[in-house]
Length: 226
Image (cartoon, rainbow, N blue to C red; front, top):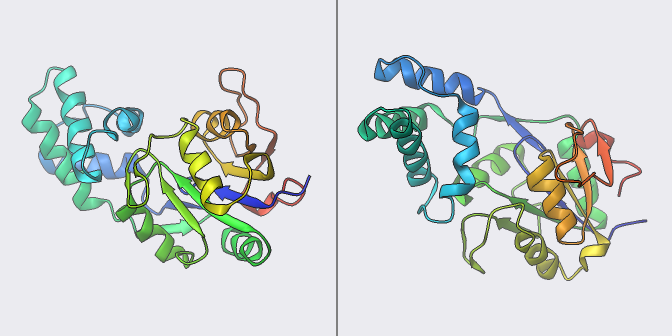
């Protein structure tokens, strides 16, 4: 089946940070002068919890860090201080494209409708796209879990709504659309629930019974899936 449109996730699919999150968090702990209280994965797991109520990524991070700190018996102020130190050391423009990304996206944009569905906030994700040279390649960008100028607040993936909004904006039916992402739950389960073809990049474990329709090692290997 040839798909008329293709949607992409960003983080871990199109690019990766030059400095891993666990390294940034470790430097934040050093700056505050405390031993590590939690792992960066603990923060990522709380992202979907606070995205619907936070006004932007700064507040989201502070809310998540404060919650994690207090749950572990530390002062809320310590969590907020860690969030500030983490933010000072995280440069969202400091990313590298994953193998084949610019070439594949440019080729697809020349012949099909292409869009993005990301759980990241607008400011941070535009910084990444500008670094990648892809800021003008996508016809629609849905910031799931955040406020969007066109739709207001959109629930985070794996809710099917952001995928359906992207398809509607492109004027292409979900069954004629493929979504490419690296997160089994957010990308595979979310796309499947919305009726899209799911393409998993990297990790191959199914989530809640959802197997990807296709799996590839990298975006460079998408030939035959779309």
